[in-house]
Length: 255
Image (tube, rainbow, N blue to C red; front, side):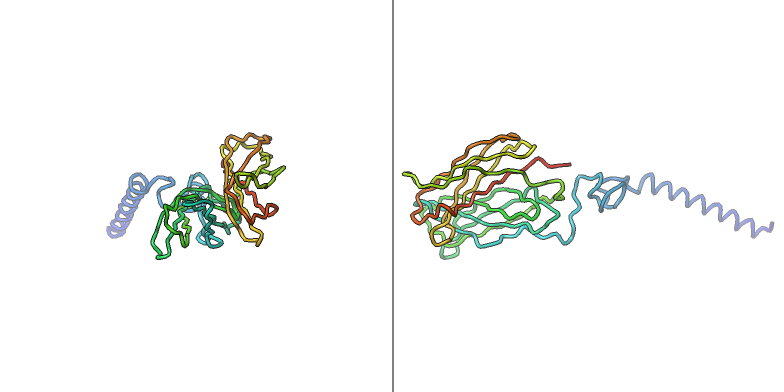
């Protein structure tokens, strides 16, 4: 073998050794180990650092926001008191939000903010639901109200199915003190529900919404049948047959 060939062979071997050392250094010290925070899709993830073995859900780029489906309704059940009613909708059929933040803001006739009332809720896939707020107007005249929604915690619909709850013996009647909605709530589900919110939406003789109120039941067990009652100040034009009763409960999330 000529001297030139030997030099070429030795040089090639030397470069190969350097390359192998470089690969070893990269995988041993530079390249991050497989994890849910390494900005790569690896070890069974459905997306980059999400899905599969990672707790973070892969959210599609085209997911639609929770929408406020109508103007926020303003009712004045008593002097200095205002109740607000907003209808919101989750247009996504494959994703539910196990939590989101909302804020009601009320303004006067000069468009100045009077008060803000915030809270959190949840919404199932494709669901339309009501959010309510009850505030003290402090003598200020409320001219309009807005609802802002933020920070939805999306999960696949198969992991957060709507609960199986039903109503029996519901009745709306006028009493000496105002309006009373009563009935019984039945848990037809296999899950315990730590809290169930029962919302009543009242309608007047004209067919328009006239007021809202709610109550909450706690620790409802599977198969349980429990009575509830909701009170509201007098509504002179009440159409008792038109009252809507809505049930909202967050079930334990399925893995």
